[in-house]
Length: 303
Image 1 (cartoon, rainbow, N blue to C red):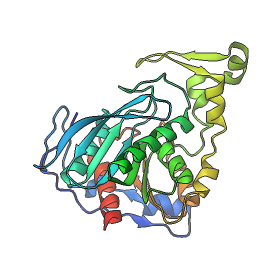
Image 2 (tube, rainbow, N blue to C red; image 1 turned 90 degrees about the horizontal axis):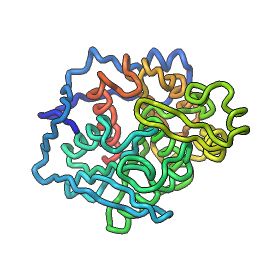
Image 3 (cartoon, rainbow, N blue to C red; image 1 turned 180 degrees about the vertical axis):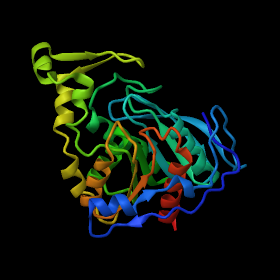
Image 4 (spheres, rainbow, N blue to C red; image 1 turned 45 degrees about the horizontal axis):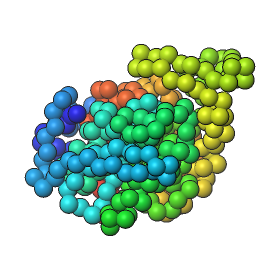
């Protein structure tokens, strides 16, 4: 858990979409950290700047009857921003807590939650599961609609970025989407985790067991094929032009290339692109720049 004190954030210049040129995009849309004079986030510290705000745990049932665990940063505002974590992560990652607390300090309620099979939520973990997690997000948004709260924006990091874009392509009840380091081509990255012979292995054995420092997991043929058959290009073309989309990506992201962000910028109708110079996939040294960009966009959407 973390947040800094005295949350005074600088204005962020976010370029509107213009005739696309990858070269110009890289030159014009880079976010220079040397121009940022904002807070440095500290670990293991939560400081609530809004005296009316409070954090409360909420459990929401998804369509499969599984309990989704989440934390609501309640400010009394009827408008909520929902935050979605990435692959094998949780609502309690540095990024999710920072963003929720920053929104809270601006008087905007935020809800961060664990997808099923992740964190404190019920259900088995599934590799892939893009459609399932999209429906988890649907259950969250419907829950808040049922208690007369309006979800004004959804934000997702990495795989979560894909989920919020897929949601916007399927449902038209969200006016703003923030895609932080989402992957444009889901076929990429599989060999890095599963090896070049992943198709042969999974056809032969029916699954692949992956061992990592953070824990082991199993990839089934069904879940692998779901990822391979999830077409982000087609999905993004289906996003309503009234839905505003911000893509934020770090120029030093080695997990998902910044080129993916440029691809999103080509095809999403109502799109803004923010490249943060020097930032890696987790924004390890660029949390303040990320928060600044996100807050600027969401507050702009709320006006």
